[in-house]
Length: 416
Ligand SMILES: Cc1cc2nc3c(=O)[nH]c(=O)nc-3n(C[C@H](O)[C@H](O)[C@H](O)COP(=O)(O)OP(=O)(O)OC[C@H]3O[C@@H](n4cnc5c(N)ncnc54)[C@H](O)[C@@H]3O)c2cc1C
Image 1 (cartoon, rainbow, N blue to C red):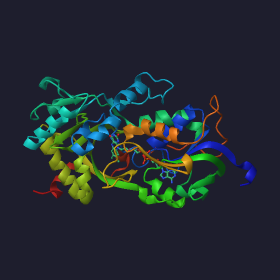
Image 2: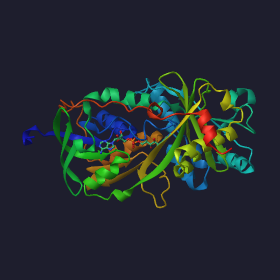
Image 3: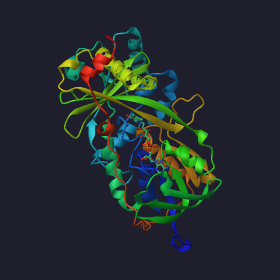
Image 4: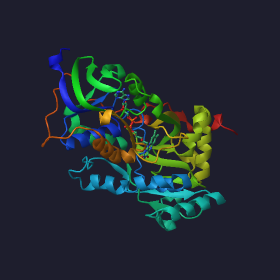
């Protein structure tokens, strides 16, 4: 590609999960000439797998060491709902994103430690979860012991959010063929030019600033730029999925002591079945289990935390697992960072960004825009000519790609 065909841009965002899309949207809204690049499919990795809960800090108050983090996330439920119900020029228009539930439910097992955890959680929260009458609980929670709390933390269908943000950005968001479809010319992390390639052609950009928002892909990008990839960490999960046309919809957490024993979120698959996604402690401890052992363990956990659910009565109940890594800025002890984080080089001309949580993408984008040196001219500048490259697809949900096992097979493989 000749020098003359290099196109100047203010900001180049590498990666189009929730973080990259939110940053691209915010930069465009701020009047910057910004381009986003995705090497696989939008949200591949964490963002399409996320359970979509817009946390307001409750989970962070269960453990003493996490309380500081509650402050950073406290405003997120209201902010996301505003963008869904009354979108304005301050953020992406999420009116077409689907809210699968306006709230989550919290219940407990019978263990004493669990009761202590619930009390601790309630005392530490600013906006307290509300105990509901037995008759106002979801049917499946009517027989669980003790109080059931309703928390105003909405749950979003993740693909619909990604679609709502990506669609208006189509003319400034392109897909390339894998990480090798991005050729970076740089010195000590200061990017000079970036050539983007797919099967049909290439485009060369000269960005003023570059943001790495590639999730686990940030490690490879940092290394390629000659920077320390050790500033990133991964926290792996082994998630469990259930599907049946008869599963009730449920969004919530079973809290046991100071930990979230299980987090359940519900969706519909393309054939109209209800799919449950199980996270929480089950997914964290499940990292050391093989899939068959994880399924047997998950089946036991579901029986223990939801005694009203009779798996044998659900038509065509099937189970699956998948593994996924959470990608974050490294912390001292490998724990979750308290907030969205950025690592800035060359006075903001190269930034590595991690939202830490899906819910914190708005805070991440604000931090990035504050840190980059480019300032917008008035109006929204036209995007560069990105032809022949095309906008990327949105990645499928994990349950659309999973390998499923019947309930009978899970039970017969598990402990008698
Ligand atoms: C199972 C699970 C459940 C979760 N549930 C919740 C929840 O309920 N609520 C919550 O707040 N948070 C949740 N999280 C956390 C949340 O999903 C993540 O914090 C968030 O999605 C990270 O977004 P991201 O855009 O940084 O990364 P990703 O979503 O991983 O996106 C990175 C993107 O970059 C692309 N890419 C990779 N390498 C390159 C490259 N070299 N060049 C260009 N593009 C590249 C990838 O294909 C991908 O599209 C959950 C996480 C997991 C794994």
